[in-house]
Every structure is written in structure tokens, then in C-alpha cells.
Image 1: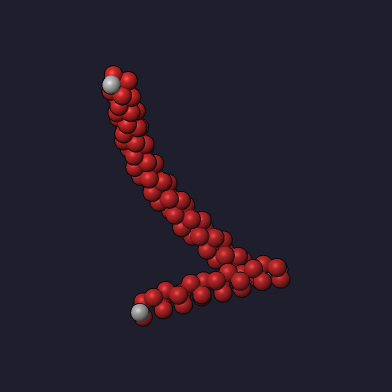
Image 2 (image 1 turned 90 degrees about the vertical axis):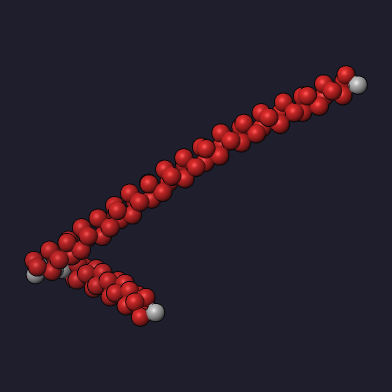
Length: 95
């Protein structure tokens, strides 16, 4: 009987330890989720900044009037991308 009581006590102790570990892991998980959201927000801001700078570069290239064929082709592709994005935005506005 004493042996059974000892085994039950050991199981209860291990269960309590597991519950404490679970609580710690849940707190860590929540902290990491918040950190990920913050990092994703920063990343999105950097992406917007890169896109803005790319648009400025494209504008400067257009203004220089000294575009070679490769630059003209790249610029045409960028313009096509912008037009597709504008079309997507207009489609979302119409729905």
C-alpha cells in the first residue's frame, strides 16, 4: 500500500512539474508571437521603403533620357508590374 501511495505521489509530482513547464512554454510562445508580429511589421515597412526607393530610381532613369535598351526593357517590365498592381487595387475597390 505504501508503495502504491509513493507511486501516486511521484506521478502527481511529475504532473505538477509538467503543468509548470507548460505554463512557462505558453508564456514564451505568446512572447515570441508578439515579437514575430513586431518583426513582420518592421519587415513590411522596409518592403514599402524599398519599393518607394525603386520607384524613385525608375523616375530618375526616365528623367535622364539616357536609357540603354536593357534599362528600357527593365523599366517597361516595372511599369507593367505597377499597372497590374493598380488593376488589382481597382478590382478590389469594385467588389
